[in-house]
Image (cartoon, rainbow, N blue to C red; front, side, top):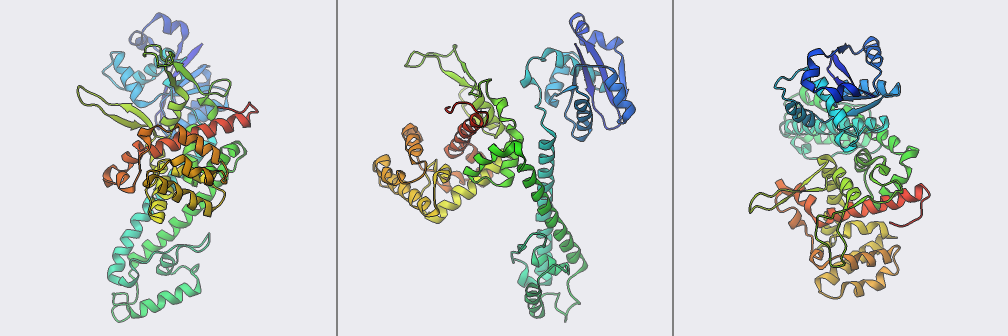
Length: 480
């Protein structure tokens, strides 16, 4: 077996071949002195030179587009490619005793890292399908454009405060796809603005006290017009990117995932990020599509006399969604932080902000931690309101919660599942989750959400639903 260490650069890739017998009979520093390095340029000649090394596994760092083009071509020729995170390679290079950092030392360090951790998949970054790479690239482009839109809109409104203050704070949204927002289309003199909108803004312009009035000037400044045109372009590009994302999500391999996401009313961006993190979901499960659990025999036995279990699948899923708890303790200081995908965690918070906090403002009731999940069991909007009010009333009046809810839950689809879930919640978790508790500090709002019981419940129930849907999709017996 042969492992190839590849240090990817923009204009040059350095590769070195390390067969099994070389790895077993020498160390990295010794091998470096006589290693045969191959310098590959990013063209067909360089690709052929890399393929001629005839390696079984190619190890490289994820350097964005530079590494992706090599990985795609190697995978196309049937070669296995693995990525190593930058921080892991830096630590390993230090373990080799090297203070120098260059392409040649990195190539050997990558090859030795690959040999030492060949049978440990968690030591490498996960290779994602090309469609997932396109999805996340499209999403990130949309996100960059959204940031640009915000900057341009703020700058333009600042100019409007002088040129036409009457419309500086007006919110404007496009009425149909393919049309820019009326306000910015009017300022940019875009032909796609409706006749009614143009007439409305013309009347405002005739009576404005700003410098855009004809008595002061000939209209809006060139800078404002130029920014407005760019805003229209950005908005239309964002719409086209959203359409692309929806087309990606409609692919057949994502169908059963979509059915689960529909129950939670996830938006397009939440779906893209979750799929990018967990697809294929089978990788989190064992061969029988069940949850991976490990007995922790070093821990003391429970009251039942059994050893506790570490839920590996559950933990990996939590980490993928940015909800992995990590112990941070030193001396008397005890604490827990949340790690994992920060991007996924932030967009799950945006989902919670819509489906929890706004609903709380609507009903003016404290939200019970699992209210955000109850929507998937509702059969109508009216029943949803009655259900939420009944739960909030039962909590506020300190009555027997389950007995109060039984008559209503029996008439709601999935009501038995809610009752079963209520009975499993320990008393220490039966506490109110208010907007004030989660939004106490604007700087810590995301961290408060990440540690809240509501977000925990969301991720746990989503995991269980995905396991069940996965087993059904593969024709396995139902059950969890």
